[in-house]
Image (cartoon, rainbow, N blue to C red; front, side, top):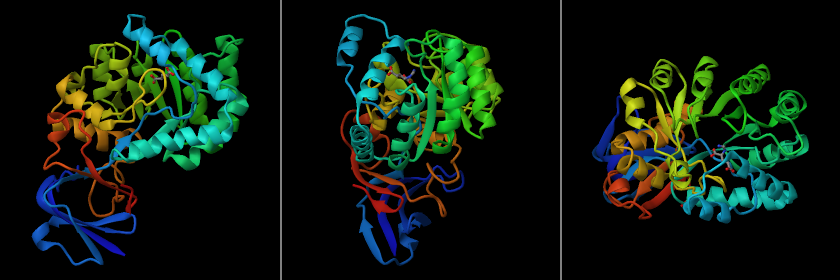
Length: 382
Ligand code: NIG
């Protein structure tokens, strides 16, 4: 069954040869894009939809979320807005609530946020464990998330739980916990930060994950300068996320590596941190991704459009840099850039149509819900 989308006013493909097309069309067959080009030469299809000049782009790729949680941290947020600092320790509040939830409650929370994200144009979502922090709870988090999102990351090393010292907990994460969780996940991550895990402990976690065949991701340089970026680059992690405090040498390391710098501006705003140096990274030649970091503590939003608007208005990324970072950049951060975050024959049919003639409207009309239609794996999702 083929579907022709025609009358696309502006089609962002993220493909270097195709570029951005005007008055374009696109054909979907099953879950794949099979044709893109000018509306005037579009082939016939079983059905068609005229988008009447609207802009279309790849669905958002949200490469960093923490959706396996329950509980509420409004009080912590309000205290921050009144001047308190964000601290990693708030994670423990969500751990207690999450441990007390039933499987059905956790699944419902994940599904609710995935549905909310998809309705705003997100078509590919990674999520992390990390609010369980013991063997059965981390396995449970990964097992419940697996069928509800596109990719799952093991973040047992999110915080040292109460009653443990860091060294014994890292041993648990690298040993029994990793063996139990690894079959359910593609990635391992560690929160490399003062108050969470230091460089030595983070290296141990990542190297243990690599031995189990997991890909590597790092939370690094979120609250201060530190070893996270350096470690991520040295171990060829797919992504180092946050990157709020970067030295010149961190930027140079990222620029000469395959590691994506994933920026999380909604988190920086919600935790009253400075915004990261996106232009410094891009000028140096690093690959940048934007993600929501949806979680109840530091960034409670699923809106990738908000992240894109912030990146443009406050981080001085151009609209096309920000859109590319929230689509292709996220795909690259998940090492899936040949299949998602791109619209060309063979790619996954993940398409976001805006009720606007160009992607510029994402920053020109910030806060306005511009999503008009979404196809996810070729199926109409909105
Ligand atoms: O990416 N930095 C560590 N983890 C999350 C925050 C989690 C929380 O505060 O609950 C983040 O910001």
